[in-house]
Amino acid sequence: MSAVTCELCPRGCVIPEGAAGDCRVRVNLGGKLRATTYGRPSAIHIDPMEKKPLYHFHPGTQVFSLATAGCNLHCLNCQNWQLSQRGGDEMEQIYRVEPAEVVAAAQGERCRGIAYTYSDPVVFYEYVEDIATLARAVGLVNVFVTAAYINREPLRRLCRVLDAAHADLKAFDDGFYRRVSSATLKPVLEAMVTMREEGIWLEVINLVIPTMNDDLAMIRRMSRWIAKELGVDTPLHFSRFMPQYRMRNLPPTPIQTLERARNEARDVGLRYVYIGNVLGDEGSTTRCPRDGTLLIGRSGFIVTENHLTPDGRCPTCNDKIPGVWS
Amino acid sequence: MNARRNELDRSGQHLCQRRRFLGVFGGLLAGLWTWGAKADPGAGPATPRELPLKEADFYRPHDLAG
Image 1: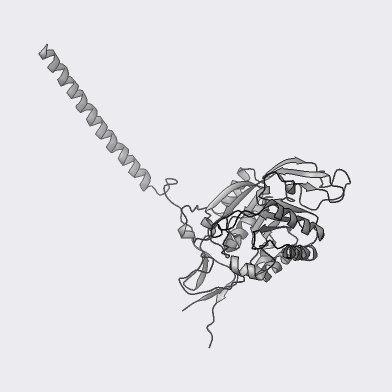
Image 2: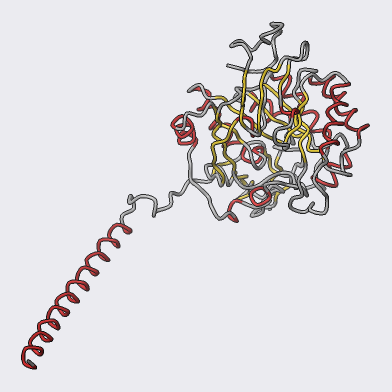
């Protein structure tokens, strides 16, 4: 009987010997908790930074993106359930890649940095930290794409080697988190505030699902919270839902719903509000909040035009546009 | 005419037998080479590399209540 308590995420799984945590990949072997997917990614790709999506962070660059199996959330609408809702030994493809090899590969492919993404990188925390430490030493940036369901202490430690995070705020409703993602809201909000306090670049995404979290009053409350706690310059992305996994009974989000959500968020003062998963929409364009000058045009994940000055200013009014541009 | 045909058939038969022998012999050699390559632990991607299981951070022994 040598059970352990995992203190990485708010679940606090009590894991008996020989069993795994809720994430499926942190396993108690002989009374020691093992990160079984360390060095064993199952997804490796080179993506545009815009796919994460990060719009105010090195636009137009490529980022070496990887993930292992497992996740500490179980969202009914997961886009990557084949990866996230499996343990490491259930994957068809498991690579063996040491942290130094990831960094060398990212450099070899001329990527601007490394993104820990696809599943939730919280569950391969140690692998992220070791890669990110080496990556930073050679000038690569580290991007954490996460649902932010992580305890404060491990997050603070990780932020020392992260440069940017893309945090998924699934709804501003604890009931939604419990029903749809088997998680809770409060730790997610705390984690986002921690990221902001630690000074890493942060963008927030909200996937708008018809009838589930598309209530405009809730979106308004969420936008107010972002403006107050994270700042009005925090980019917010409203993303279009497509029927997936165990939520195929709902239709794709109407474009008008996304536009209404965007208007609500701008109305409470957020200055950079985007619409995602809609090809060619004006909602993916960055404009100067002061004079409306088109700063960065995008089509899908491609930057079609970039008029920012080299130091990240509007060419018309010379206002500094928040972000990491060079 | 028949004698000539028989001679050709026989030489063809010999040729076939020689080819068959070379084929079987070559196959055996190739098999031995492949086996040798597979048996070599440093022989590339055919041999999966094992990594030790990393110990996780942020956990503690669980105390039972009572």
